[in-house]
Length: 115
Length: 111
Image (tube, rainbow over all chains, first blue to last red; front, side, top):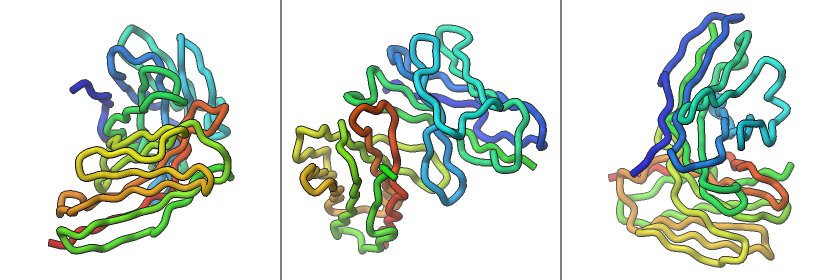
C-alpha cells in the first residue's frame, strides 16, 4: 500500500540554524500539507500546497518557513532560522483531492529538536 | 475556536471490552476523519465520514456522525492490547481545506 515517507526521522539542530525536512507524498496525490505537533499538544496545520503554490497557510507559517516541491516526488519544509519553540513533531500529509472530500494520509513524522 | 473537543481525555479498558470516544465541534463540516497515533509515532488514518453520512464501519471500528448535535463518536469493539493508542478526530470545516484536530483520547487496553 502506498505510503507517505519522511526523512529524517529525528533532527537535532542548534538555535538559529536552517533545517530542511523532507517528504515523499503518495505518487498520485495532488495536495500536500505540513502539520506539526508540539509535545503534548494538538496537531496544528501549517501549510497546504497545490499546483506548485501555497494554497493556504496558518499564522504559525511565518517568513521563517517555506515549502518547495523541487522535483516530481519530494516536498520539503524549510525553517530558515530555528527557534527553541520550533521543537515539535512535523508531519507531512497528502491527499488525492481537496480535503473537503478526500482522506489525508500522514507520514511517520520528523521529530525536530532545537537546542 | 472551530476546533473539535474530544472526551474522554483518557480511557482505560480491559481487553475484549468496547471503547467509545466522542468528538464535538462548533461549525458545519465537510467531513470528519479519525486517526490513531501510537506513542511518539505517525498518524494512521482510520475512517472518513462525510457530512451527509450518519454511520460508517471498518472492521472493528464504527463511526457515527450527528450533524444536528455537531458530534461524532468512534467505537472500537472487542478491544485488543494493540489498540492502545491516542485517537484523534479531525474536521474539515465548510469552506475550508485543512484538517483541524481535536486534543485526542488516550486509550489504554489492559491485557
